[in-house]
Length: 452
Image (cartoon, rainbow, N blue to C red; front, side, top):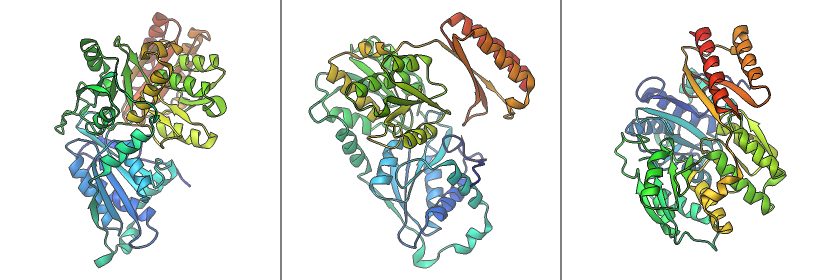
């Protein structure tokens, strides 16, 4: 099946709200196409729809609902709920698909639409490509249902409660969070109610921030992309640690009691060590991406384990985990997947798993984080007008090769296009901070001239 996609990126369709492709018209078409693809029999199909706290969520929610119902499929509306919560509800309610309306860590002006299959996993590339094709297929109009066969929309009022109960069930029953003071930053996003409920009910003493969404403040100088906010609060309140989520709650970044950042790579290193020591790290393998820090690879090797790298994007991490039967994987950004518990990255669940390690080993986060030493990375983003294949530009290939030779086997170079933005990402990693900075700057200047 053809996997060529124009609308869908690595994490669904995304853009500025009310500007193509993030318009009500496109949302309606997406809803119709998704419903058409999953429909098996009239009156027996359903799709779950949830969102984050963006102002534009209403516009897209109603449009995609109309599209789904127009094809004879029922809709279950969850309202604001973290992306992993929507995946969980989709699976637990035995719905045929799930829709998430969110632009994750992007500013409130943006929004996005991504799909889950009935089992809670993101749709594969070929199905997304098929949905795009269906959107412009005039034959779909010929199978519109009428009268009683049109779909209905129902609101599920207890969705958050179901999700909170599930999250608590993943935390060891013999443990609680009594005595732990935690700064919790919910980014004014989808976790603003669920996360405080989970940690309070498990006994934590919470200092909360980012729990008053107004539709326009999601991710604004808070959450996982601004960990310095919770770091200051951790030191001010003498908390044990800080936990920050992104707008849709599938990522988490933490800080220790000293305010030092613990990112996704460190979280995976800590949890991999714990799982390995308890004989639960299947095939002694963690799945990361080409962006995962070299320090994670070294830390795993020291444990007698290995890092399997995939392309950037949590969908590719999950695909590799399912194919290989692995239980732990993720990204440096804090998108971590515990496949024994859930089907996608879940910031709250990830934080709970790490807290369980702290309690089990009776060690503070700062001590646990020493399992991995971070190799310096230099990341530069170049804005581009079009995504020209660098393999077809000899001078670009030569520039990348020259940069790799300068590192002399003491680091690596990665150049790739963003899956969600018009950016060329240049990453240089090595053991010498000054050297990798020079290499990255020189390479970016060369590529900028070639691509301008």
